[in-house]
Length: 368
Image (cartoon, rainbow, N blue to C red; front, side):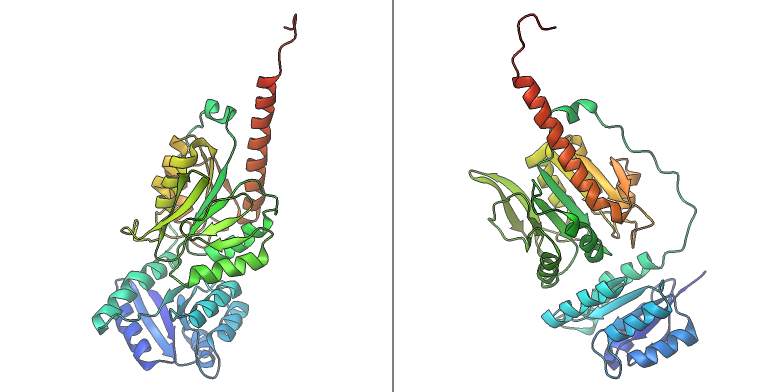
């Protein structure tokens, strides 16, 4: 059996030992080497040809960001998972790393209390990401075509909200899609990006600096308004609810779904209940199945679901499984998703306005 060969680069002896022992115990994985700084890490990559590198952010001699920049020049397709601390500085550096081309990130165990707790945290977060990024190519399954849409549900409805779900590769995908949205966009956007606390706030701030529309980390009680986007905060589910003055955002810490909090399914179901056929959902790059049942709820209510295609996804887990379920109205490469969102929203609202005008126009005597 082919084993995934991993290089661990971290200046902490404890972390190197913990990662090496934990990964070595996993079926199909082996740690082929370790390095205590980025310069040594680059030498080990050239010598050992690993399938994946875990890379610390803060290291002497050559830090993680400088190392990553060199790795991307020399080995553009080599998966790199940043291993960072759950702090403001660590989160900011991780977002920098993702922008530089890191494949994903995992947070170092903190406040776990015991070595066993730290090991379990690594198993829960890091190992699934390694498996997703290093999955071996298999023969493509014959996926079913999208379920046929019901024409009648499209005739009198217009899109009133856009909701997005994404995970692995999502920050860069969002940085490609959201800056294309114009400042006069006529509907609100609500989204889930699987990330822990701190990370989501910093991500919202960074996107706000790149976009024509305001981008916020969601807060409970906020009333939705057109031309703005809200990101679910880490460790909270995001939902929407009718209120006397409009639609408001709500947050809760109910149990995770699909091992996720925030969960795409939770948000999608909520949006489907409130907006029904006026929903456009977008599922982008990410590992796992979060979003599948939510997409089904949206289409049952008459809404639309589009997904990112496989070649442009870092991991085609979430969008691929939504597609495989038959709950899609279109599949698009990342560079087309922003314009497709704009097109579908504008077209639906123009068509609905035209039907409304036609219905309100009195029929002249003698007209046939």
